[in-house]
Length: 368
Ligand SMILES: [Zn+2]
Ligand SMILES: [Zn+2]
Image 1 (cartoon, rainbow, N blue to C red):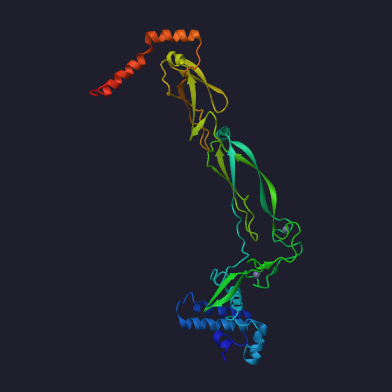
Image 2 (cartoon, rainbow, N blue to C red):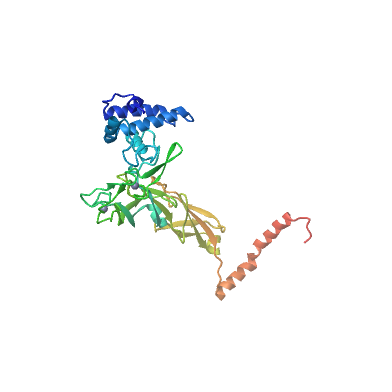
């Protein structure tokens, strides 16, 4: 007959605390994680587990003291036959010491998930900043039951299947293997009196309305974080965060690139040839005057200073870039036609002439 007191190195009148200390010390020394492949340590580890699981149970201890054995204490006893006894003891004594040894520990406060909200805003809202209201359905921790899912005054009960651990252990060779408890879905607790408001879920879906300040200068892909507006945490854990991902809608007239805003403005041939002053729309809704010097070619770029977009956190705006293009009239009055024909007769083929000259230089030696 094994002497459990001797195995643990304690006296016959050892208290529960003495037992726990002794077991902890020995189990740490002989733990298989620390003695890989050591058969002797393995056997010793089994032995101290067996001793502790007997002496730690006052009923079993009394029986053992009286009969010198723990057999006959009813079915299910024995740390390495059901696995349950071992795991319970282990967790009770060690807590977090070995991390997740023997199974997943449940019911730890866990932070809620982050949420993503995609928001479209206009280009001028992006340039000048704006305030938006986000409306969306969102899970909130139930206030009636403070998120635990039980009716007021009631508490969830420890799952009888897994004894609250959330996992069922079984023996596979020497090692204790665990799987998630099917009765409580791994929660370790069972709600016997569900909260009426949330039907035991501990959370309820609410229509949420959040007002959001969008700073000037944001761009497509900009990410705004709203702390604590994500999903509620589990078991009293903190809320996750809400991330608002911005998309700037395309504008029919302006195109933005970083801090620059581009646009294209048409001028007529006489305007381009003689020079003029035109009005160019800007993103803030006003019109900027732009001088077109005589002889301006199609495609020429002009800069209007300070009419672009700022960077987030800066008041200084980039520039607006204006591309001039020549618009050729498609309908001419007979008078216009007359004048153009006259112009052409004087000077009209000068362009094509000089172009031909250029080509000649390029392709000299080639038979035409
Ligand atoms: Zn369970
Ligand atoms: Zn509730």
